[in-house]
Length: 169
Image (cartoon, rainbow, N blue to C red; front, side, top):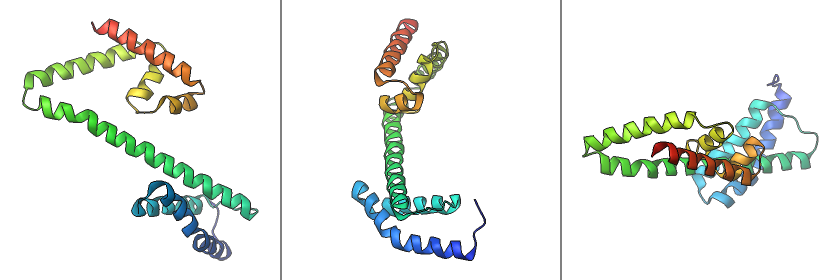
C-alpha cells in the first residue's frame, strides 16, 4: 500500500460515491439479498483502498470493478455451499449417533482408518480426492486449481474411490 495523500483520498471518495451503487447493483442482481450485496460491495472497495491501485482510464476501472464483483459473488456462493454441505453431512451423525455410543466409537474408528488409507493414495490422486471431499471443491474448480482437465479429475476421483473401497473391505 502506498502513502495516501489528500488528493488520493479525495479521488477514492469520488470513486466510491460514483461506483458504489453500480457495484452494489451488480452484486444484488446475482444474490437477490441486500445485506450480503452491501457486504460484498464494501469488501470490494475495502480491497481497492488497501491495495491503493491507481487506474489510468475509466474503462479499465469499470472492468476491474466488474471482475471484482464477479469473484466476490462466486466466492460467496462457494463458501455458502461449503457451509450448507458440511451442515448436511454432519446432521445424520448428530441425529443417529447421539444416542448410540457404540456407533459413535465405530464411526470414529472408521474415520481414522479412512484418513490413514487416504494418506496411502498416490499423488496427484490424493490431492484431487482431498480437494473434492475435504475442501468441497467442484471438479471444475479442482481442474482450474491444479491445471488439469475435468476428465482427469474424474479419473483420479474414481481411482481413489476404487482403491479406498478395496482397502477398507
